[in-house]
Image (cartoon, rainbow, N blue to C red; front, side, top):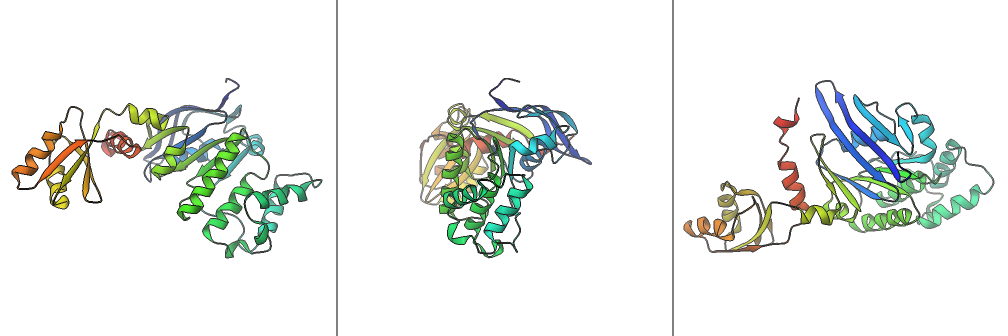
Amino acid sequence: MSPETVIRTRNLSKRFGATLAVDDLTLEVTRGEVYGFLGPNGSGKSTTLRMLCGLLTPSAGEITVLGHALPGAAERLKRELGYMTQRFSLYRDLTVLENLRFLAALHDLPTAGLGRRLDALMARYTLGELRHRLAGTLSGGQQQRLALAATVMHAPALLLLDEPTSAVDPQSRRDFWEALFELADAGTTLLVSTHYMDEAERCTRLAILDHGRLVADGSPRALMEALPESPLRVITDRPRQAQQRLLALPEVIAVAQIGTALRVLVVPGTTPETLTRPLKQAGLSATARADTPSLEDVFVAATRRTPAAEASP
């Protein structure tokens, strides 16, 4: 394992009875990356994260995290790893300060200098005025900041974050990502699962999972530039009727209404005229032009290539 590799999996699989939740997953994450997991519910994101931190034992394959072979070295890995779950998991009947002190004790942090460490965390994550508030009374964004402070309490080299912004408002999500980039700049490696496209675009590298399989891997820009399918923008006077007509065409993969326009993802080689001709024949006015690929286009195309029937054993 090279010095810069933080996570490496080879042919990783996890089965729950007849369900194959993770299927032959091979990936590598290097130090300092903000690596994203993007995928629909049930795609294997959370299951993979739990195997990477030693909470689940793989059914097959190999895992090495921070030089530790899992699951055998899971206990040793805990001191170097931070794991933030999707749901708030701290003690709701303890105050902010009491939660942080309790976690400091769990991590065996030395008492010398602990007060300064706690003050620094509360200042960084805007928790100072909330230190004596019960965690259960905090807003979603405040609980999120407390959870992140608790996760980085012991200065881990690697953070695994499982859809950490699913229950907070857009401004809190933006602030949270600024905090993540600050950690990355300081040398922390981050693996973040999300189902938000705007968050996925922030990652330095991205894996798209579907039915437990890795269906795309690369930087967001590289994935968009390599997209073989084409997005077209259709302007029509009756977008709802036009959408139904377009979805019946074999060349059309997906249609989404954006305001009064339609964004249409089509197979390679499809021209704008392929779309406008049947619309005009149906009595609808329509113009079409090529559009710039987006990460959502990449996601739709990649997950389309792995239908459930193929992914099931």
